[in-house]
Length: 96
Image (tube, rainbow, N blue to C red):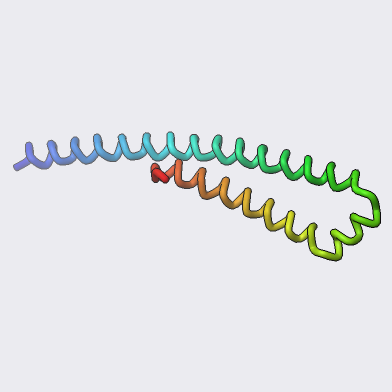
């Protein structure tokens, strides 16, 4: 009976050690993925902001009244949300 308990304890430790290692590896990969995608989204939004600065003031005012700034904000939020979801799916090992 004691041998069975020792064997089950060893099996449980072996399974949990592997799970912890996979969890830590997934979390590290998720952080790297999120950081990379966040940098990419921020550089995209900086380029858009730079391009918006080169538009004539009259056209810029019309675009501002039309809500282009809010639309760009929504797009940026969507990009960062997608980056967060992608990194979370990598951390959890979900294939999409």
